[in-house]
Image (cartoon, rainbow, N blue to C red; front, side, top):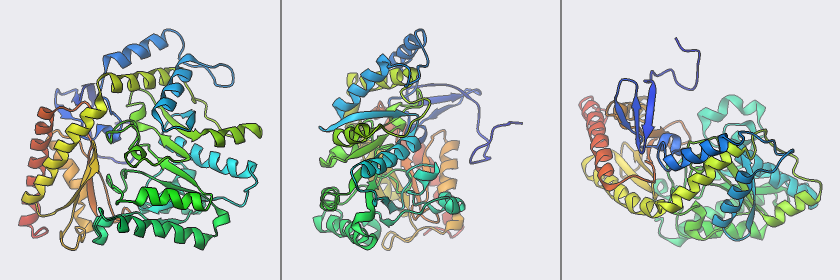
Length: 445
């Protein structure tokens, strides 16, 4: 009997060891980590250079409080992050995870508004659906009903606009008019709320768990940047899942050449070796806040030297092995293989993503994109079938958490072409079993 509890009571085996894209349980079964955990283990498991860097730091010091000491790993990692971010994104604030990073970003934005005489600005517009973290501040930005509904009385509800899901709305995502269509919703919301009250707009450049690797339509990212500039609103990019190289560039925003005012990064940034995240901000924002007395925020483990030594080694490995190039190459191959499955399984309605942040969505009708019946619980069933095939994938519900079923396929950035074959063999068997069970029951066409 376990004293641990979490989201699910589903029985899982005991982890024994992990290496590369594989994880073994204590019974000797080998699983393919097809989702990199929760899109975390970007460089694979048990990288010897990262472990060596951590061991070297452990031999020196495992903790140094930020108010008492500067640390070499923290300074070197901040310098490295700034060099990988767009020009002007010079200031780095370390945290231990994605929720902390997003909370930090919103608090920095708010304090910047206060110290620059814009104290009426406090509303942060986000999209629906979206996921920006589980702390109450980050949850108020989140649009995913099962996770937010129980806690609404504790939160300050923030305004939402529709996510740019062109594939569900029957619009051409390659047409710049589609991008302008969705961006216009942001401008309309700003005007409805009162421009002088809106602090920031937050978005994931490439969608995470709530939208399943959603890629914005042509022109959308640039239009959003122009609208934020027009009304003096800060643009925050949630790069917790898309950052760190997984989309084939260090940041998702890089794919469109759009520079935010503040960004948050985590998950693959530390790649599972240590709890690590960061907020990165434009220098003018941080200078204004520090000049007014400093950032009124912090976490005990901010800039922890052991975590920073791991993070620096992760970034060095990404560069040494040219993992982002591999991510682009293998991601293109894997996406094509997923698209080919649409010819075999009529209930796969969409395949999307960038690099190795990929997803596919199941539907009842590909023409209307009507979701599968919610009580079918496909998002859970297919995950379990894949797990029985010893392939780990990650699922959520596309339509705000109540219906729709999408599955993230995001193996580590070191994945090879032969390993793509392994992944697809296991996934195809799981999909076949899913189809056989539900077609015979009359639940799928």
